Amino acid sequence: MVCDRHGWPLTFTLSPGQDGDTQHFMPTMESIHLPGQVGRPRKRCRHIVADKGYDSDALRRYCYRQRMKPVIAQRKMKRRPRPGLPRGFDKPKYRERNVIERGFGWLKELRRIATRYDKLVSSFAAMVCLACIDRCLRADFSYKT
Image (cartoon, rainbow, N blue to C red; front, side, top):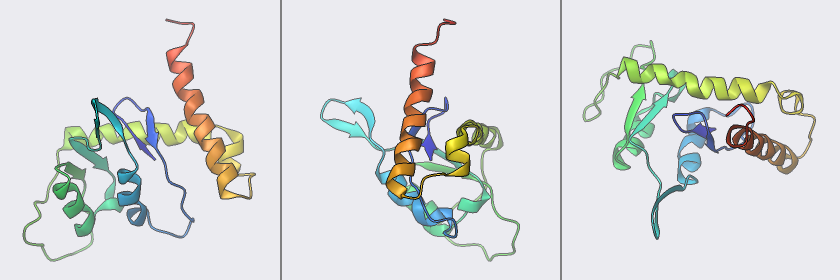
């Protein structure tokens, strides 16, 4: 799932449980279309904030090609330094990663999604999509404001 800095879900991709998340990062990012100028929808943001599981050279190269700055912590395993890819990250910006964690926590509060009663991927994707629409509508039409 990809969300903006306020926690609004932009897109999601369903994957098998045994697959790594980095395999699905680039196709998920390519499916985002942000509102922008007329006739030219934006596809990129300035920063990508992700956890250590997304620390790979291919992913960093993709981010730099798309002119996005990856804010990804390095894994603790011993690796030789790769030339051409700057390392390190912005710690205050990395703290914003809790937005996506809260989004997943909110999504897992919904019983039907957390236990995955649906057998078909299309049915489960529809339920996740409905949950994301519900989240956006609750924020836009809340009675508290």
